[in-house]
Amino acid sequence: MIPERLAYAVKEFSPKSDLAVIERAYDFAAKAHEGQVRRTGEAYIVHPTETAVTLAKLRLPQNIIVAGLLHDVPEDTSVTIKEIETLFGADVAGMVAGITKLGKIKYRGMERYVENLRKMFLAMASDVRTILIKFADRLHNLSTLDSLPPPKRRRIALESLEIFAPIANRLGMGEIQGRLEDLSFKYVFPQEYAWVEALVKKRYVEKERYLRKVGERVRSELAKNGIAALDIHGRTKHYYSLYKKALKHERNLDKIYDLVALRVIVPTISDCYATLGIVHQLWKPLKGRIKDYIAQPKPNGYQSLHTTVFCDGGEIVEIQIRTEQMHEEAEYGIAAHWHYVEEGKESKNAVKESLGWVKDLMKWQQESLNDGSLLESLEYAKVDVFSKRIFVFTPSGDVIDLPEDATPVDFGYAIHSDIGNKCSGARINSVVAKLDAKLYSGDMCEIIIDKNRKAPNPDWIKFVKTRHAKDHIRSSMNAAQRGWLENLLPGGKGKN
Ligand code: MN
Image (cartoon, rainbow, N blue to C red; front, side, top):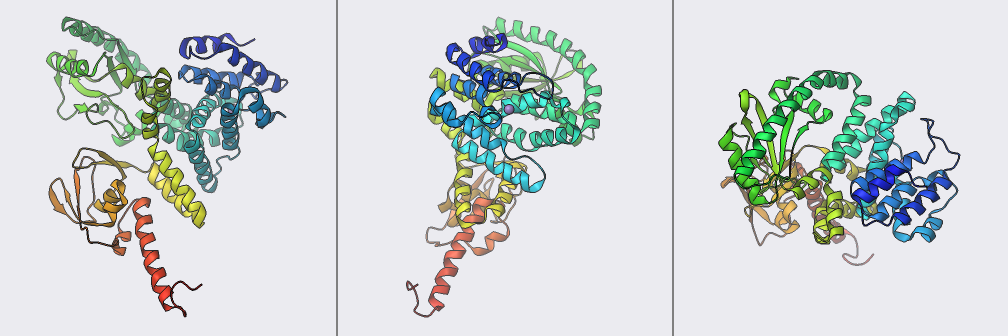
């Protein structure tokens, strides 16, 4: 018998799934794990069940939920991937195999860290659904971490904080990122966690009460203007993201205006802008804090209007305005894309596009596997993916995502290798700039091209910041060197 929690989650959030298939998978997993007990003392099947519940709540389709139920079967029992394929099909078996591979390597310091990253990325590029299952699996493991010995607790928490959460962020899964971070935070930085918890608990309660009143006022003002808000709710900042922000403000929480925020969900994009206008008629906005992420989304796809206002009684409140689809994407990122594809509301291309950066990683990993410089390029990958990013505009308004301190040459290569190879000058915000100038977030950069240029300048290698640019410059240097060597060798070119 399938547990009620799972049946409910599937019926409620993934109604297109065939409950009979889910039930068959549950029975199969329960039988395979029979007699196994978790450290918590519970039957093992509780863990895959909770994993599947999380996946169902993300509104993911049937096969992912089934793979979630089966994810630990090949690892912990005598059942093989082949049997799973026979019983549940190649698609499910492929995901389960992916998860099993991913679980083999554990975080134990730098070398393993890098290795694990690679596994993650490879798995992601071949099937991002594997990552979603891994997140759901990890969320449940983190929630039962107390039953593990302390060193193991710390390892799993640290791995979640340093590897899983940044990937969730890059996939636009804000809610999952927040949950992963908060569950790990407690174990990785116990004292800091206690500090944040003590500090905000009371404030959250007070602020939430206040926000409810503000929300009611917004709702009635919108109604007067013919806008029916779909949902208005307060959101409290996740503990870990609050902690990171507090560190930037000398631990002074009074300077953090989005400790709590009011979210207003309205039907259409024009309603979003109309709502912003209505809010600004009610309360005066703070200078420089109005952000239009609808016209200019964040690189991970995040969309919303943000404003911070002097609210009733002089309180400062951040208000976030968005449509329902924007809301789901902000919370569940790529998982929401999947849901929309299932519903036929969005083309598969949109999903593919948002996976572009994953594909890029996959490609260069394949390349570096061939030339044996894998470890070196993984070092770059770590830097590229996890260091701070800046966002620079092209003259046509596209946003290019670059690492901090990137230069116009990095920018050129990020647009197209030809633009990088042939760049001869740059303008930053319409002012002529050197090719090694530092770019900053929000800059508009324009590359001046020399069509006759054959190859990049080898000196650029000294200042470029992205692996992508380095690779291109280096490979053209190597080609030049090879030509030079071949001419020196007896017999000359072509005879070897
Ligand atoms: Mn598991």
